[in-house]
Every structure is written in structure tokens, then in C-alpha cells.
Length: 349
Image (cartoon, rainbow, N blue to C red; front, top):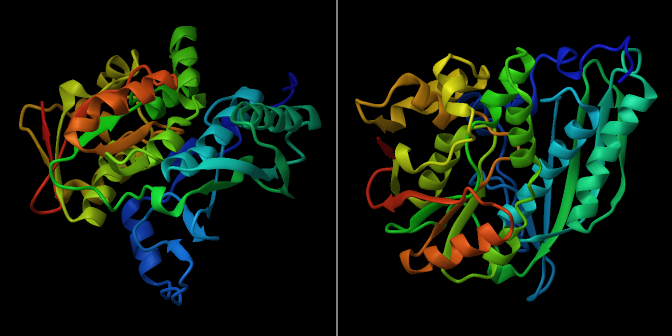
């Protein structure tokens, strides 16, 4: 970024997965879209808010297709590209698959950004795809009023190893693989109150590939899986509950947090998406009376490239945790259970 250029986060009205349309508005929009005609090879479509579409190629192989893009959550162009790419690939991993290639989605305000800055964004995305062992094989670019970057991600999975967000079972343990607070730390960075250690922690979490998802896809004890992004932990857990026809109980004290997240949340720092998220699903959440507002905010914080949320049989918990930790997800924690009954979430202290 040249000295005359504005900060990346000043060029857009929002950043990261906090840019997502609120759950309530999205639900209203999708209700107006006619249902797709039945296709026998379409194993996963848009009917259950899953992370990606899945198309059966043969008895042994299915194709995963997804896309994800957003505006800058950080000012460093290379870091922005890394976060966006890791976030897009996460949807493939969350379905139990392995990415094979990506296409770049690029929209940049060419009058406000230098070619060098744009090139650094693309290089950041390419570096993460290299870590994932895949090429960026093409893409599309436009001149846009705000900077946008992301990927179309393509992957493969065995049809019998696809992990959906709607196949959880009552009694399943719930495991979360990354600490919450990415959205809160990103907002603190924009306000100039995030120190270097906090930025490094946020970047480390947001660029960590959820590659363990491919191994978890083959694990019979894993029944459902999704990743936690713009709707926050509560929003994505609620999608799992709705799709699976179960409720859930989680304990705030068990939930992993990024180190600076709690103190920043107590100062009232956080993205506007928190308010939108809570307004969208508050009627389906039973918060313990002792939970404070900042704790509720953390549970609804919009995560950009957040962790995997895994529903597994109780006897598989140790193995699932070992797989996640071995992949680099060192904050992995058991946070609660799926329970029979209404599609509601009870949040204990």
C-alpha cells in the first residue's frame, strides 16, 4: 500500500464475514426463490443452509462447489488475501472434503488502489492455496466501488463421507475448533486499539486452514459439521439444530476465546453484525440470567474464517479432538451437546 492510499478498511462499509446479510433478511430473501427442480445427483443444495453444494459424480466420488468473498477485515493487503482464501476453502473442509482447485473473485476500486496493493491481495490468497496444495486456476475481476476478494472453491469427497449441518443426533457432543472473537478483534484494529499481539492472534486464527475437516469426513463417529462464520456461533449452531430437528445446550465457560476478546467485548467493541445476529435469532436462544451482555455478544460475534463446529458421538470426542489439535487447532474444546426437543439453544454460564 502506498503512502497516498487509504487504509483498506476505510475503502469499504464493512469487513470480513461481518458483511453478510443478516440471518433474518437472508431467510426472507431465500423464501422468495423458487425451489430447484429435483436432480438425482445433487446430494446437497440450498435447502438446509449447508456450507457448499455437493454433486455426485460416481458411487465413489462427489464434487463440492462453493464461493465466498468479502470486503477487507484488515489493512494489510497480503493478510486480507490470506484470510479471504482460508475462509473460502473452509466450506469445502466443513463438508468433509478436500479442495482441488480455486477460482479468484476480484472486485477493486482501481482509481483508489494501486496495482501493487491489488497484487499483494492476490498473492496472499495464492499463498494459502499453496498451503492447501491447490492452484488458483483462473477467476474473474471487475472495477468495483469497494474492494472485494474471495474464491470459488472446488473439492472432492466420497458421497458416503459428506458431512452436513442437518444430520446431528440428540446426545451428540459439540466441539469447537477455534476461539471466538475474530470479529471483535477486527473492529478493535479498525479503531486503533488492538495491539500487535492481538493482531497476530487474530491473524493466526483466521488464516489457519480447517483441513482436519477432510479427515473428520471419513470418521463414522462424526455426524454433522459446519464452520462458524458471519452468523456467529449461535447462528450456525441454530442452523444445525433446525436442520437436525434437535435442541442444544452449551456452556459459556467451556467456549474457547481469543485472549483479547473478553476485555474488548466488555468495552463494548464489536462489529455491527453482532446486533443483527442477536436480533435475528434471540427468540430461539435461552440465555442464563447470569450471562452478561458482553458474553452474549461474543456468542453472536461474526467470525471471519472461524473454526469447525462438530457434532459427534460421545465416544468419538477424544479422537475428534486429537485430529483437530494435530491440524493446528490448539484451542479445540468440547462446548456442549445436542439434545432432544425443540430447536432451541440453552446457554449456561
